[in-house]
Amino acid sequence: MSITLAVKDSVATLAIDGSFDFESHTQFREISRQCLSDPAVCEVQVDFDRVQYLDSSALGMLLLLRERAVEGHKTVSLINVHGISRKIIEVANFSRLFRVLFRPDIC
Amino acid sequence: MKILVADDTQTNCLIVGRLIKMLGHEAVFASNGAEAVRVFQAETPDMVLMDVMMPEMDGYEATRQIRALSSDRWIPIIFLSALNEDGAQFRGLEAGGDDYLLKPVNMEWLKAKIRSMERVLLLQRQLTDKQIHLERYRKASETSKHEAAHLLEAYMSQFSDPIPGLKTWISPAEVMSGDVVLAAYGQHGVVNLILADCTGHGLAAAVTAYPVADAFYTMSTRGFSIARIAREINRKVRDIALPFGRFVAATLVQIDTEQNLIVAWCGGLPPAYVIDISGRVVKQFNSSHLPLGVLSDHDFSAEVERFQLDVPASLYLSSDGLEEVRNRDGKFFGQEQFLNTLQKLPQDKRFHGVKEGISQWLGGDSAHDDVSFLELSLPLTLPALSSYTLTVADWRFGFSFTVVGDWREQISPLVVNTLRQVGMTSRFISDVQSLLFFLIQAHFVTKKSSDMNFPLRIEFLACSALDAEQRLAISISESDSLPLPATKESLPFTDVSIPKFSWLNARITDLSCGGVLLSMPIQCLPGAGA
Image 1 (spheres, each protein chain N blue to C red):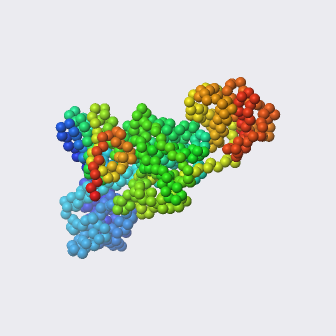
Image 2: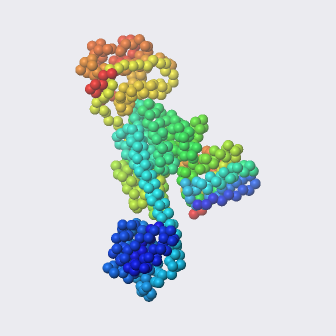
Image 3: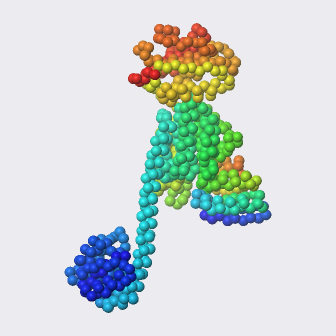
């Protein structure tokens, strides 16, 4: 698992590669803190393009990211959500809290 | 360091011994192999300098024996020998020596060797100490985990009632599980179920599970609806768990056994299925809410879904851990396979079939997440209790109030709280509530009133010592003035039993002053008098 951060204008994109789970906790927290403290950032995008799996602790991390983002008047969106991530995010009804953009599955 | 010098030549012992002292270490001596082994046992030195050619037992054999005696720790052994040939050096290392120095010994070389061994030894000791420390820590942690698991299990078991036709299975990923599978009698022939998955596993998840179980059971027995229960659990979990990114995915189900109605609140778990005996899915409850503990009380939605069941069927709830069980190739068990297993098997084989399917899929490995699964056969017929027992008897209490709106929700918590304190089991209370609601409805009918706001007086009386028949009496009236009869003679009963509650052997009568009174036999435990 690795997370890369790219900031372009007012949008920070956290691209997660691999399995998004409890192991990602420290790195995810560090990087979220980094982009939330950047006053230029208005929107945080979490890119699920290369996420192979996510568990409930990852959902918890997203909730915490959102809580802090809301405090700083920033928005969080989940982009390129597909496959197993899509299913998990749908069952959890996270689209009520985040802007979720799905991408079609490539077979 | 203590260094053992084994040499049959006194002079060698003397010279090497002096060097050892000069380096600040202590020397002990042996003049042959057998003595070396004995001294080794008695003195437990940290290093050995071993001559090869010695009487009685040579250095190779002594080394082998010393190695066998000290298998739990590493002792550097350096051979000092005049045998200058490859074979001798090889045999020395083979016997377990760590180095080989030729005699006559160059003192500078020996000094350097001792120092180098000392450094390795030090490093090795540090590692061993850390390992011992870690092992001790691991054992202590395991022990406390098992103790905590045992305690939590004992606590949790008080939050579940035995329900006929209910099968549950929880397989924790660690010692403790964050999954909660409970059933409780509610009011008026209602049975409540919860299957909840607290995020994470192990202790933290299990600790979140406790307030979930507590709120579910307490509120169920007090007659709250699952919408109210879900809201309360949401509030509790949000306060304690969300700051740590934790929440609870859950399905709560309420079964009205009299009307065969299923009411469900689903947040964040896989669908709940109702499957009839032919394998047809007659109802699927999908997750329509965020998990519990995510939204504020204000934003929380307690909207429930209802389903009227007309055919015999079974209800299935599961945690996502079940679908996400992976086989050795990393492939998920999956929702489809779960549903297929349920649909292809006859009703009585499904529960076992799913468990079997999961364990085959795992192929002897353990699941990485908690797995839980529940089956309830419907329609649910609550068995009659053979006897109703009170642990506290000879009491009476009553409530007077004006009912506004839904009287069930208002009356239940009051009544249940009090009845619990006089020692009624939750099943007994559930039946008493059914009777109470039946009476209130009967009272309604006699009043022929459509007024939604009406005064109500409910009175309970338990008597054990008046005569041979111990009984519980419940009266419903409009005013405070209705006296409950104190003795059997003054009980104005006609022998009218209530068809719906025939097993209770209860009798009911209209009271002349405009109320209804019910009486049923009970048993009071010896010494139950208040």
